[in-house]
Length: 521
View 1 (cartoon, rainbow, N blue to C red):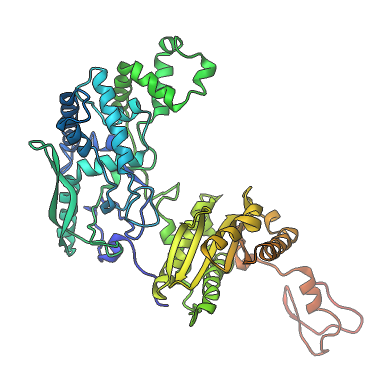
View 2: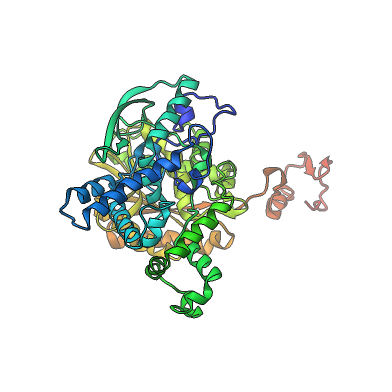
């Protein structure tokens, strides 16, 4: 099969990084679950980021002015302009966020628009003519995820990221092409977005011509600095007496998101104090090098397994396609069980959660599918819920893989009902149910036998071929320390060996046994 496909920006464009390269190296084939946190941009005084935070606030000043001008009339031109400005499409150029199966985004712009607009209306009603941080809008509105706030920042400050990426590309001689960039800038005079033709590197994995925009690692987080929970803890700790007028302590421990938002709206001065306190703290970005939450490394982990296996069964007709998918599962299983790759599923001495194992598997099999022109989708939905993996070549060659931890509370439901139901919904005849075992108890014969029997029962009941595979992902000793079981030693030294066979014991060759007995192994 050759070498696995290269998918990181630096690999695709042959970049040798230097100390001047502070940018995050994105995976171009799928989104990485990290986001741009505006609170990390706020204190940055380095070129070209000096002024970026003020640029963001200038944008929202324009929106505030429009909403104020509209007087709440949704039919007015000012209101409609504010609506259009707050339409933040997920910026596919960054390859960041929560839509990890592709770099094309999830298209949640309208939900973000509504949330931001409600936040602006609330802030104006509280007497604000702008906000010191856009997260204030989220607190008033009830909280928006970091990925949604990141979408807003990446759109509003896109011109900064364009210049930054162009500088990186010129420094490394990365080819750039003219491409139309949506929301490349905004115009205060006309209060509107501007799409522009810009020279940028192109993403070879995107469905349509899509540029790549780079982000400094120091701007990235997976958990936002400003959260409704953080605000609530600050408010209760610093203003407990005032809050007891509305909440007793028992209720405060179980307060809902709606109640937190209401409290923020009722106490805007505490919100401002909370944000000011955060400005004084030192906020660290996500440590990409350590990657303790495995946001970045599954790509390298999967590729490491795939790189060790060149032989793959290539289907010649649709009837052989399930065997191809079975071969992919066996490659993954062989790497984990026989080539030491179990270590990849144990991060910081802790076994990897189910979603991360699936992500490693996804990256392991991706390049095989591409080489054989096999369409490969994660979490495909056919109306009965999302199956973990679906493989297809044309309309007739299809198969699925469902992967769960043996320890999962849904493991037996998965093999007896969910996996076959997903297959039936997709018109698939063969589904592989893969269990990941981390402990001796999960690898006990009683468990593996029960899994085999469950697959047989599911196959008979649903009329679908359910094929069970258990992968032994237990931590293993080095091969140099493994000792054979006693029965193997006994067999080696049993009395019916040829009389001239040397006795190989712990201390090396010994003279043949006499007829009176045998030495203990």
